[in-house]
Length: 265
Ligand SMILES: [Zn+2]
Ligand SMILES: [Zn+2]
Image 1 (cartoon, rainbow, N blue to C red):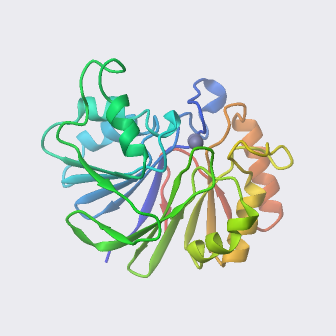
Image 2 (cartoon, rainbow, N blue to C red; image 1 turned 90 degrees about the vertical axis):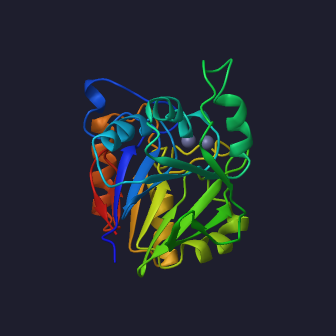
C-alpha cells in the first residue's frame, strides 16, 4: 500500500519563466512526480525535470525512473537534456509515449545536443485504449487516451490501491470527444488540468483551456479534485492568486499547482 503524493516540478505552459514575480507558483514547464516504492513515475519532462534530477541524485532508494510523455512539444521534453546528461548509471530510465518517442531520437542527439542522450534509456510505445503496466512494477495500472491538442497528444490514467489520477496535459476540450473523456476521467481522485488561459480568454484552436473548463469536467466526471497547471507565461503570482480566489469563491474543488508542494491522492 503506497501513500500516493504527486509533486509538481513544473507548472508553466509553453515556456519557462524566471524572476521575482513568479516565485510563488514557480517558473518551470510541465513535470510531475509520483513515488511508487523504489520507482519514480514522472508525467512529462519539461524544464521541471532538471530540479527533479537534482533532488533524485540526493535521494536513496529509487532504482528506476519511468517518464510518461504526453507529446513532444518542447515545453514537455526540455528537461530531458539536463536530466539525462547528469544521470548516473545506477538508475534505469524508461520513457513511455506515442509518436513523441520517434521525435526524441532526432532531438536528443547531434546537432541539437553534443551527445546522443538515449543510449541506455529504454523506450516503451504506448497504445491509446490499451492498458499497460510499468516495466518491473506490477502494481500500478496505466491507460492512455488520444488527447485533443494540435499535433496529437496522449493523456494518462493511473489506478493503484483504489486511488486514481488522470493527467490531461495538454488539452483543449473537444465536444465530439467529451463522452470518451468523461469515461476516461470517471471518478478520479485527482485530475491534472491545462489551465493555460484565464477564463473567457481561451483561444480556440491553440490546444489549451482555462480552470473553469477543468472544474466543469471534474464535476461532470465525478472527480474529487482538479489540479490546475500549464499556466501561460504572462500569468504572474498576482494574476494566479486572483484566479485561485475566483475558483475558491465558486466552491469548486480546484487546486492551483505550485512547484515542489505535495498533493496527496
Ligand atoms: Zn504544453
Ligand atoms: Zn503542447
